[in-house]
Length: 344
Image (cartoon, rainbow, N blue to C red; front, side, top):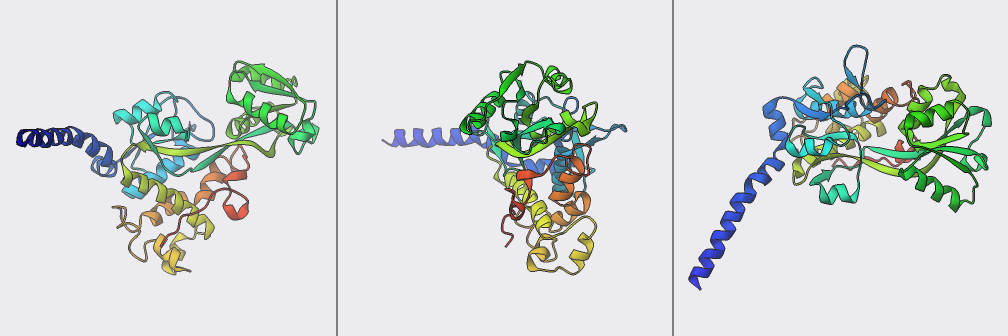
């Protein structure tokens, strides 16, 4: 019996030894980032308009890039302590697992398969990806019902086919589907007037409108056919890093809810209008201690990139070439799905 007990103890010890390094490697991301002095964040192998693209000066910009900057600032105090690593859609998951990047901020849908089978852990959604409709402005359509009997350009073999069929069928709206294998063919057909509308991921529609010969000829209907939560992904088991990610997103939303901006953050910090703002901006200690960061991390971040609204509007919203309506990405009090966590 004694030999059996010793054998069990030895097996447990060996198992712990073997499992230990893996847990440590996946649980020390913030420490690794600090030691390296930079955050390794996802870019795109090319340009994903509005989210990750390179400007005429060779610098990265876009909605996802701004969140990379926000995370770098939260952890390291500066948006300049950031390395953007260009990766394809297929490469993003292996690149994270291998350590080539620290985090995936690349409009990545939070799905059960990815969450349970790929060794990923998602933070709270930072973008709600809508499937909407782009239509010809001359039709004056305000809803899908106004496009009754129209022709829809649709990417063949995608989930958009199912989404449109389910949505229109449930409302008994008759339409004709014109399917295309390639996005370039689909856009060309729309521009040429072969179809009345195009259903797809909201940002894709915004880019399609932007690239049209006459962008003003097209409008995006403020009607959502389906939603996909886009989350920031880290390696499974690193709870501290996920905490940092979640509170980073929440801090940007808290700042918007309380009208804290890049322009007024110093004034707000000098004379906080509420205890919540005092905690947010590090006047009252604690917001950093709990996460292993400096207590002024949120102040530094807001001063560098602004609040959620400022990021959205300048990259993909009304102050950008794409003019993508916020829709469900509004705050809850404005009819959207975003809300801040309780900063106690």
